[in-house]
Amino acid sequence: MDRYQRVEKPKPETPIDENEIRITSQGRMRSYITYAMTLLQEKGSNEIVFKAMGRDINKTVTIVELIKRRIISLHQNTAIGSTDITDKWEPLKEGLLPLETTRHVSMITITLSMKELYTSFVGYQPLLPAELVKALTKFEYDG
Image 1 (cartoon, rainbow, N blue to C red):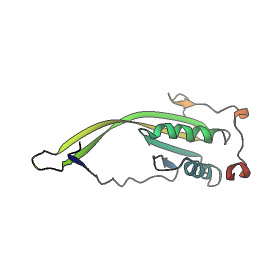
Image 2: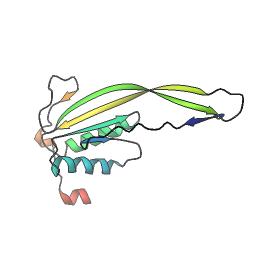
Image 3: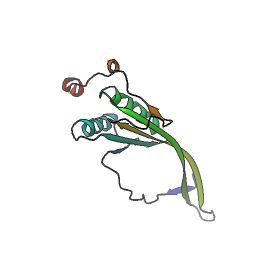
Image 4: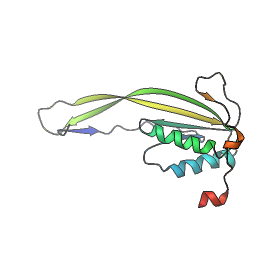
């Protein structure tokens, strides 16, 4: 592929809800956790939705588990899926044809809610036992 250059596609302008957090490889875990905790504790959101694709799925699961161990009574629904992403490549040398490649990428959507979610949902996880949840103190968080 050294004879080709990937063509950047314009990203579609899809609105993001205030309670939706899209995890990317550039974002810091601490920033995502801080934002989610603020939504749940200070802004009064009853539900937050985390979305990630590909390699960022591990990071998302870690973030969600950390939050669940800091805020009591969070229900969780997890949905997994996949999508196809098509990349276009332009040749750098004359005589070559443009190429298109398709990648099959995994994706995850995790919903955390203060209210009970659909318990019959395949990806439902009940509340953690109270002894596993350690309330976050200001000192611990800043330190």
